[in-house]
Image (cartoon, rainbow, N blue to C red; front, side):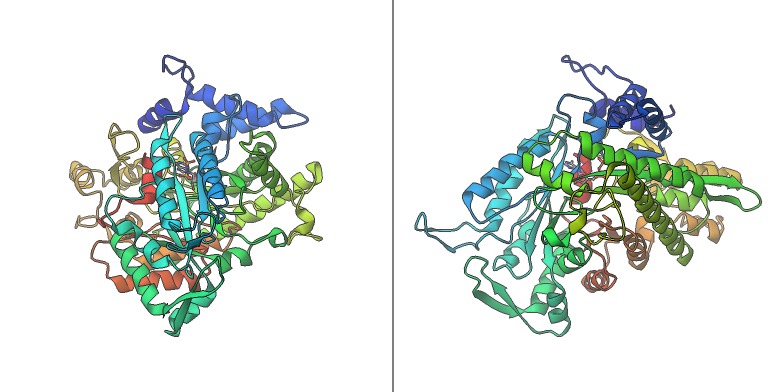
Amino acid sequence: MKLSKNALQLLNARYLLKNSEDEVIETPEQLFSRVAKYVASAENEDKEKWEDRFNDLLTHLYFLPNSPTLMNAGLPNGQLSACFVLPVEDSLSSIFTTLKNTAMIHQSGGGTGYNFSQLRPKGDMVSSSGGVSSGPMAFIKIYDTATEHIRQGGKRRGANMGILNVDHPDIEEFILAKTAGDTLHNFNLSVGITDDFMETVQHERDWKLMNPRTKKIAKTIKAKKLWDQIVSQAWATGDPGLIFLDTLNKHNTVAEIGKIQSTNPCGEVPLFEYESCNLGSINLSKMVTLKEPEGTAVDWNKLERAIASAIRFLDNIVSINHYLLPQIAAITKNNRKVGLGVMGWAEMLALLNIPYASEKAILLGERIMQFVQSKSYMASAELAKERGDFPNWKKSTFHPNKHMRNATCNSIAPTGSISVIADTSYSIEPLYALAYKRVGILDNQTQMEVNPIFVGKMQALGLWTDQVKNEVLNTGSIQQLEHIPKKVKKVFETSLEIPWEYHLKHQQAFQKYTDNAVSKTINLIKSTPKETVSDIYMTAWKYGLKGITIYRDGSKADQVLQACHLN
Ligand code: ADP
């Protein structure tokens, strides 16, 4: 197997099995065969055939499942899912039961999301004690502190998504939560937004905050004022993001069993309370073929084969996963949601000589994801024939015409760690720089690397010189080099050189064909004004995105999305 130095380091530190002396006792090949064997054990027939096929998929780095599957598959009680949502009801018992369950999920490598909007506001009456309530923020801080102290099997810190709906009386405190210095490192915060609120902002009308316990209006404020607070905070710190609750529920395939109130930590999977989901991503940088006379082209056949095997792989995990709680097992097995996505999109574009900031890239993005979705649905329908529909199928939007094994098939995850293992670009993000250290992944031990696809292209063009190498090692960019042709520069624009409009259009292109959601960060240069953040958040809603996150270069908080992966 060919693995990069950084991939080997990461695998050594966190994925390969160790003995009680903390010595690594498996090779990367053994890791992949452990995973393939375990996942194939779910098959009724031809176990060996499937084991080989899964092993092939993994060792070629065509597809990788989420980290907990790589870490835990085949181990006693191995918990394999990355994504969970847990309930938070308005009682101390519920709050602390969920905190306990959170600890267990984090320890196993999963991340948790919650909507705190059912909690009565700060200062509200508590009849049992005769006192007053601490409010959602106090409990979010407790969750954050607990997370800080539960290292995931000594491997990484946990990650959480905290949502508070825009009509909760404590929403202003929530919006400002990350200004108060060094707090809430283990949370992404998102305001739960409704279409009603967005229209109220547009018309600059009054907005009512409601006490969830009494259902009485607690306060009336100008919607625009609340919007400006959200925008200012996001501009200053990156948080809060937005979650568009009505859009989530419009696309809820099992709406009959209830409303969805929350997503997992990075936003790519809307889930019911206690529901979990397994993710996996196809490496698009490996789905490009040499073709004469054009040079390179998308290898649709290879992509199709990878999708069908990957959906089967993820469906198998639902069957053979070890669930931490009976409630998680029940709803997860009834809906059998999986989230197949992609990584290496920017590298695929570079291999095809298509600039990220171009209409051609947007159109290809749509085509690719439409293909991934339709082939995923075909694979799921095939599995339904073989193994039966998901148990809640009769309550789903698929009933009665379309048989399906899984209530959802696709999510675009950030692929924070697995893209390092696959040595490709993150998710659908543009290249962050042409030379970089994967800083933070392993306490700065990682190597400085120049993107190999960039080097290959420059060599082919006869442009790979010491001058170019030094420039990219120093600045990460080739935009200031006068002798490089414009066309080449355009293909190698990096994240902060790409206008926000194109970041957003890529998110939209992939969201169009993703039944769950797309996790993406709209990276902005430091001088970006607040009005742009407002435009981005408003456009995200109009585009029908399910959520939105921005990060302005150099703003003060840690970039939580990165912090998730980098700790
Ligand atoms: P990976 O590359 O490790 O498989 P991703 O970066 O694609 O993971 O993230 C997918 C999901 O995994 C996240 O949305 C979140 O639910 C979970 N996750 C990611 N990082 C962490 C973490 N440090 N702790 C807990 N869960 C995490």
